[in-house]
Length: 353
Image (cartoon, rainbow, N blue to C red; front, side, top):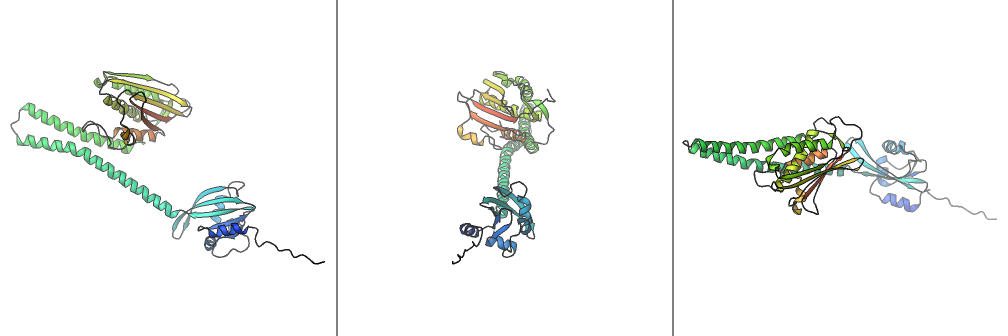
C-alpha cells in the first residue's frame, strides 16, 4: 500500500489576506486568536526592526499597541482607537484599526501626524482670518465717529466767535460720537469675556421678565404689544445677567425692525426633559434670506451707520453657546422674524427664583 503524502499549509492565513496586508502602505499585522503576531507586512517589519521571529504576543512586539487595544473583551473584535507616542523626533499621532478575521484579526496603523499638523495650521489660519475680519470691522466702526469728531473740532477751532447754542450743538455731536466709540469698545470687551462669570440655577422666564420690565419703561416700546407665555419647569444653569443681555438684544432688534410699532410674542416651552426653548417672534418685515447665514457674524449689520455696531447678535450667540445652547433664526411662515434660544434644562431646584 502506497503512503499518501499530505502537504501542510504554509501559513494559517490565506494567501489573499497576506497579499492584501503586504500591499498596504501603512504598517499592518495579522494576529491569531490569542493575540500573537503571525505576519508583518513590509512597513510593520521595518517598524519592528526586521523580519518576524516566531509568534510573539502583540505586547512584546509593540507594547503601545497592546496597551491601547487590550482593554475590552473580546479585545480582538472590531476596534478603532487613537494613540500618541513619543519618539526621538517628537510626538507621533496614530490611528489603530483592528478588524476581526477568521481565527484572528488584522491590525492596521495609520500615521496621522502630518494630518494633525495640517489641521492645526488650518485652524490657526482660520483664527487669523477671523481676527483680520474683526480688526477691519473695528477700524470701520471707529473711523466714522473719529472722522466726525475731527471735522467738528476743526469747525469749532476755525470759528472762535460761535454762539453758545452752536457751541453746545458741536460739543453734543462730539459727545455722541465718543459714546459710539465707547460702545464698540465695551461690546468688544464683552465679546472677549463671555463665559467667565459665576453661574447659578434659575428659571429662564425670570430673566425674560426682567428684560421686559425694563423695556416696557422705554418710550420706544410704547406702541409695541408684548406677550409672554412662561413655563415654570424651564430651569437652566448659567449667568442671569448674560442671558438677560441676549433677550435685550432680541427685543431691541425686533422693535427696530418693526419701527416701533407691532407685536412681540415670547413663548417658553419644554419640548423634551433635557432642553428648554424660548421663542421670540415679531410681526415685522422679516429678515432678507441672503442675510440669514451672516446674521451672527461680528460687525455684520443691516442698520444705518450709527444705529448698530453689528456685535449684539454676535455676542448673544457666543453667550448662548457658552451656556451649552444654540440660537436658531428663521422667517415665520405668517410673517416676521422668529428666534429660538435652546438651552440645557437643569433638573431639581433653583437658587434664584
